[in-house]
Length: 214
Image 1: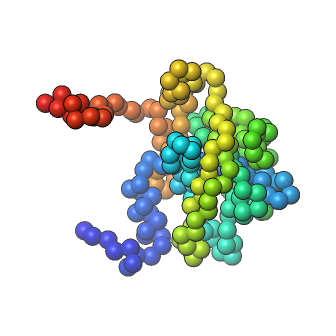
Image 2: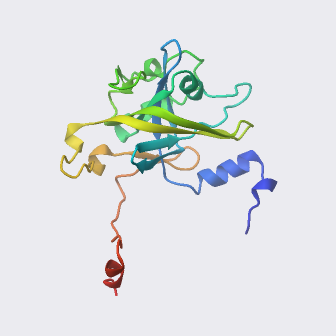
Image 3: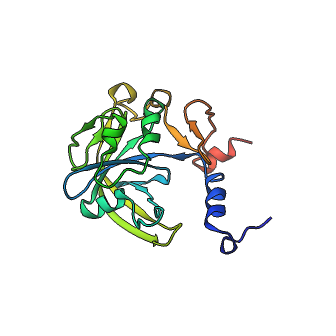
């Protein structure tokens, strides 16, 4: 069947997208407001953009009424910096708990018991328990729609990256997938351990490579 988004309500579109665009990596984003109070929240609209300059994006959506913007977005508008902490199985309970709707100004670090560590290049702290973290400066904020069901694209230039020494191959800069054990978001309340069910395929980078498969 063919679905016409213009004829579907927000809940139906959301359920369809969340159960087909998957698995989605989770950006565990830490920010601070103008008073320096920290916030920590997970976002499953998250992706790397490019390498030069090293750039990532995540997308906060419009929160339930009467609020118009999430604390993360308000903080970034006031202090245009953020840290993306990679969500892994070792801290997934805290990641999930940090999605709770705390009042503005109350810290999810306190709620989850996670440890804020000063960043080296930006004002928001990173999560000590996260094995990988990207310190970012806001490059752009693109508003798609501020109506219910809408959201924003936040682009960040990575100024510094942190990684557990035990995870990184210093020659190739590959991170050990199984040791990192990243978590992805599926539909509804389901998650997936991205390290437990993997397979490898040959990447055909040239015409000669492609010809060799015959």
